[in-house]
Image (cartoon, rainbow, N blue to C red; front, top):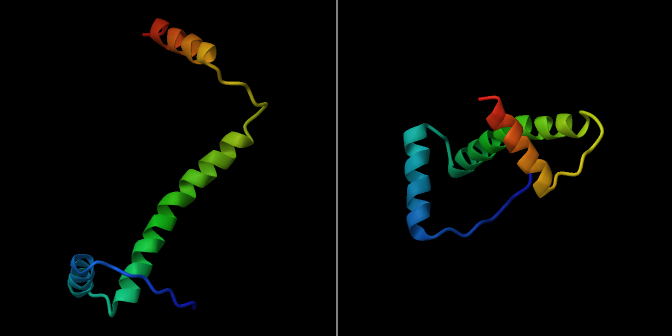
Length: 78
């Protein structure tokens, strides 16, 4: 593993230490790692959807006119 040093305001340090105690983490590093892994898990599906969109067909130019036409089509369907 790699070491990462960060500077935190005292109030944030206190908050982090409280979260470590409440969450049953063995240390601050474990808590920070948990937060990062949560964010990474949230980002993965979004990235997959973006890649799926890129592979979904021929690209189109999205202009103001395109958006206006799309809006009109959607409103007609209501």
